[in-house]
Length: 277
Image (cartoon, rainbow, N blue to C red; front, side, top):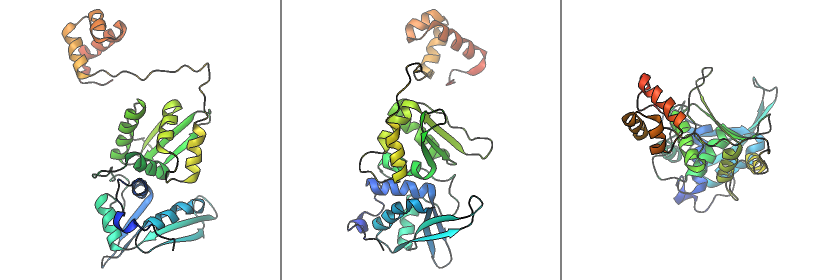
């Protein structure tokens, strides 16, 4: 068994510790908590064997008996799949992570950000490492994306990134499999990657390398940069309706006359003053 962190017993799953915040986010997204009769059960994570070093770090941070094992088997996706699994059975460990927000059994739609104080960027890095991607699109644009079935996780990422970069996203389940696909490209993705994958952080090494590679992208001179769209607020809607004059509203609200005219038309035709479109 890997040497354990001497402070692990007293700090296990203290989510203000960046290492445990990351670990918890990763376990929420890619772990599995099972239970059987007589209080038996297991907390497990199975990854491609190339990522075994991360599982050994989880083992080092866990002050309970745990194991890292390997296996090779045939799957629907590959004739030979070589994976590594980290597992801990201790009831105390399972109780701690369950109370923090990892349900027993199927959990993809049920998980939410922790309801205790936690290191936010480390937690999100864990989520991205487990269920996200980062790199370059086929068109050569940098990107960071997350695929999740959890409304709470998708919404939290959007809220966090808007505060960080100003980039706004609205989540919507796709029709094919009912999950959310949230993606950031260009400068927002670069800023997000640099923020999440800082020097010395706990992370999958391959994704840390991908994050570093995003920093080399330069916007082509012929690629225009579109400013983030300014959303209409309820207060602005009410002011626009009260004035009833796009030209006067443009001066009052600091917007274009054409924008005020279009918005006023939408409000008067039934979209309502609380629309965010």
